[in-house]
Image (cartoon, rainbow, N blue to C red; front, side, top):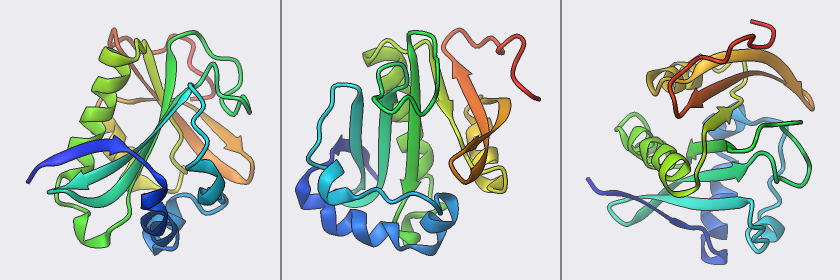
Length: 171
């Protein structure tokens, strides 16, 4: 199986809308409306929206955000070089086949090698044990519990230098 990442386009809108209604995707991000018609056409320099393809078939989505430059300051004050990743596999039959792991590895490499990241942060729901275990397999470490909007999340980080965050949040 060949897994690739490519830039998302308006041609991907039907997939993105369908994936938003998938029960597993909804469970991992229940309080967000991505408003794809608008978001897919916006191309701020601080964001990379990518489609995960398996054997040339769209199966998921990754967003890589420069957490310092992101316009809503969702992540709050962050050190330069901090990036955030959102990832999901939208096609149920593509889950648990290693596609997400391959895509995550590519996203991490893109952050550290291509974008100059020194740190990557993610924020799975604290109730999403599968996602938390997935991120820990890549070396992400717990930083703090944090509420984003209505969502209780576990902020996790992966540092390029491999060190743990000293004085990490609430944990």
